[in-house]
Length: 219
Image 1 (cartoon, rainbow, N blue to C red):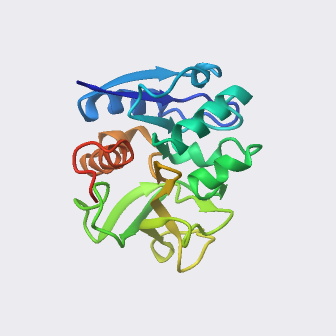
Image 2: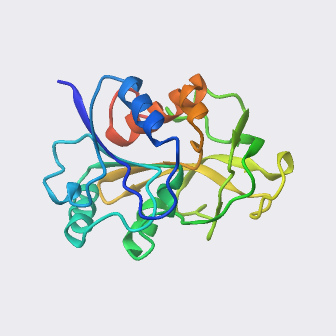
């Protein structure tokens, strides 16, 4: 049976131009039945039918109170949650969301080339990547360093670009468990070009599969 994904792209703050291309990419990543929504009430229904819920460059407050309760219950009972890029700029007024995701966005320097250092290759999102991954993105800084509360998969090498603000230990991609559920987050994915990049597409697919416990989910 084809696994279902709920891809949520509602924005009430900054909106990324890449969202349509990102959604189109997710539709072609794997054998998923993708339901895309920007409805604030979309998460108020039963979520158990979905293998994972994906927040794809959401921003601002995007859920109703009932939606928050549903999402929390879904993850706690074993559901998968995936946050991509501006998902870290989302639901600032909901403390649980910050815990769920692992960290909240603080700022970013200019969009520019840089290097991501892959420190954990034993995961579906990173096992295909080189130890030093050249990429172009916004290199998000976070309000707190999530290390210790998450399993860090890749970090930003701040010496490879201008304007980094977290120092030598700058987590960029991570995963964690919340209740019985799984959470994967990647700070990458700002531009439409990212969703055409084979390495990034495999990175995103690996994260979704892990969170949803599909395919190579043992990593």
